[in-house]
Length: 232
Ligand SMILES: Cc1cc2nc3c(=O)[nH]c(=O)nc-3n(C[C@H](O)[C@H](O)[C@H](O)COP(=O)(O)OP(=O)(O)OC[C@H]3O[C@@H](n4cnc5c(N)ncnc54)[C@H](O)[C@@H]3O)c2cc1C
Image (cartoon, rainbow, N blue to C red):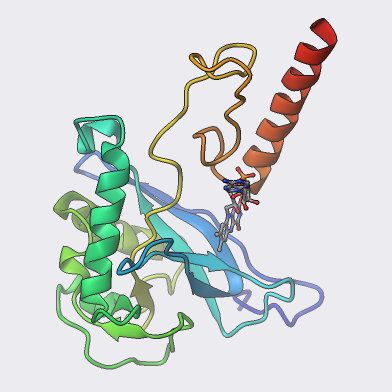
């Protein structure tokens, strides 16, 4: 089978992208699929847990991992301009509690997640996340609409990639930093609309969602800065 076999020099590592549109109107998609990679700790705050995924160049760790993302909109976090960050932080603080307040990430086997049953022991798949994965029920890890959407999407993904809903696969929570929940507005010269000479750029400013888009935005901003200097 052509799977997570980074050791094969001809085939290399298997990559994929999946999307499912759910009955409740949400879209669920796979994000940053990392063949032969690890799930890594990515929190920036005490008593919060955030996960991310990455592969080393060799892509030959024992597991493949992928973010499972549910699309949200500002309607999900109404209020002030920083409400999206509050929303992220609430999920991350709750993940810390579900993980046992030790910086372990909360996790659940896919079979148990689909059956809404607390996981108690690992099966064939061992987690890569350090310091640890604390098995639990992820039912409260995300809002109900997101849990419902993921429960619908995983069996749909299984139809596209048999094995995706493997009962022993591990869901590790939570990956909340897929894109910036805020954007610093800029004008058509790429400068902040209210602070002349400030060029918001890249992911943190809300103009990129990955390595490539951040790099392209950096080029556009660098050109705008150069044009501004030449024009002065
Ligand atoms: C574990 C992990 C895996 C990822 N995997 C992927 C992937 O597979 N594919 C993908 O497309 N994207 C991936 N990403 C996302 C990708 O890394 C980012 O989208 C991208 O790096 C954003 O680029 P940026 O230049 O906007 O910001 P950054 O790369 O974060 O650069 C910001 C820079 O500003 C510096 N800085 C911050 N504050 C200050 C300050 N006050 N003064 C001076 N300097 C400061 C920081 O030190 C940093 O060097 C991953 C991210 C992580 C954490």
